[in-house]
Length: 307
Image (cartoon, rainbow, N blue to C red):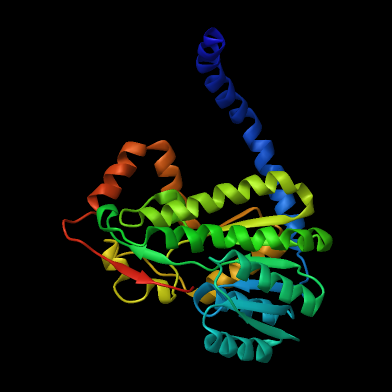
């Protein structure tokens, strides 16, 4: 067995690189053709039922508006019911034929079951589930407190919601939208638990995609820094990135819904953020040095909830 492992270590990598060299051009051409097909055959979501968690502000709020412009029926979930009512009213004005609001905390299993059941009981179906609810905390690992809540909301919240929605999504041949973060790939200092929760989220839904096959579509979104309550104020200076350009939430939300309707597997918005991923893969030493150089010797804590 050890000989087989040694043989694979020596042979497999060069063989794989050679195969990629020859197969990459036709693969990219086919991918381009399929992209054209998806653009032409983009899903019409008019009168389809879309459930969005964390819809009271930020990306979730503007995803609701984008779906509303396309005539979708909405179920909006968050902890702040008063904010949800404001979002629901605007969604109706933008063209959604019907909107319901459900106050819930996604970190609690029973509340996730409740809002899925309430949506299905009211509308009879669920076509799209947007797992958007999330929190962020900016601090050094040694200074971290209340660690479990980040994982409970960012990871387990999307797991619970998906678990109860899957039977209904199978019936409707529906889709799951996962709002993760580029932090899952870039591993920015002071965002260790946030990055870990988002990385776990990506791995989980990639596994589900393999399990579900064509029955349920899954679009994994990795936004960069986007205008929201989570990134307001001193967020960028505290992670030592005051230079980072911030994308408008409206632009990000439109790209997310477009990508979902086309059936894309992944969306990174803005697309230039992919450079960081390739730098991490191809030049890990340089990438780690850049990340470490962002650290300063002062403690820092910043928390903002409900996206």
